[in-house]
Image (cartoon, rainbow, N blue to C red; front, top):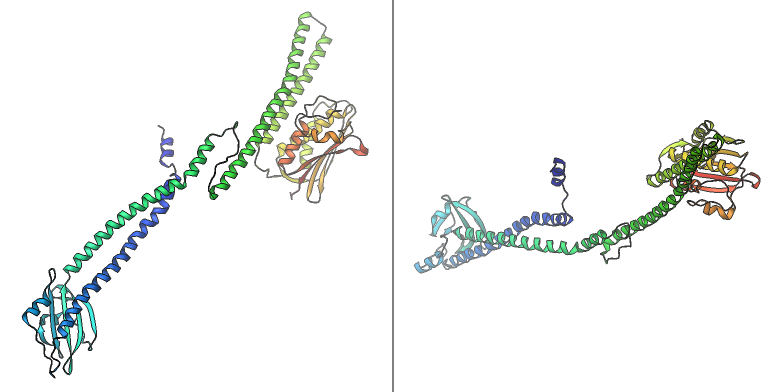
Length: 469
């Protein structure tokens, strides 16, 4: 396997299914951790709030044990109550009742050393915070309560083992649920994309069945988004169908037109060989050679026209070269001046600037066909005039002759391939005007068949959009 093929395989673009799946899942995978963190924060707040309420209940129970009948702060609890207040299967619970002046009345006086130190609260106020005591982290609940004529403080704290264990369990559950949800969403998205792309697959299968012999329109029931694509394919098939039909007609007509001069040429050659074998006079042989030359010239002209027609049809790009029709006509005149012209031919030029945007080769071929037709069909002592110029935004070039012309009713068919006027003399193939009309259309112009001067002859006029040179 060549290196180029390996490179092409390595950079092969991903399928539409894979692209859609990636575009849908990447945002989901990026947002799910963020949503998980937000959910974990909310659960942590709710869990801490619930556990803080349990500590507040202990603080309220202690606050209720103050002796309200004494003017001095006094509090006493029984040993069983102390054990009940301190009972917890996972954490250690500490509490202390503090009189004004930071004097401990009951409980664990060590709580007064926590950092940061608790503030003095008014009666009825409470506060929760995380504190440090001898290197341990505690959750502290502080309550301000009346004690006789004073306000005392109740501090209740516990270690964080239960909270850490609960949050670790919640975090693990969230991770498992998140992974499961992501997998379920990926499977759902994958299935949904496959279902959504089934019309595209059906359309591709239907397209696989099309070729130049089967260009019938697509008729699948497709979603609204794919309807323009189907319509575009149908328009393309219509253009291909018309092009294929035109190509078949062109090949059939071209084969017929080429067969006749080639068959005649073969016959003339065989006759010449027979004459030479019989030792006929040079005069008779010269006559045969003259006819052969005419046949060769006609075949060469027909081949040149067919090639020009093929080039005109193959050139789908709009012409963009700025040129002057006067220069095209001048070059044509120089070319004809070097030829052996028919006896009595009067070929004249009346040229003025006419700038257009076009293809020099095709416009030269168009003008060559018009002049050749005029010389061929005008007959002996033909007068052919080539003119060009500009009229407003339009540039034009025309070829006029004094021949028999073409009847108005025959002019539309004369612009078709391999069609000639009914009263037309000469030996043409009927391609000259058709090629000129095709080239005119490709340049955004039009070809008109008009009467010559004083109603005699034919004047063929090409009109094109003008431009600044």
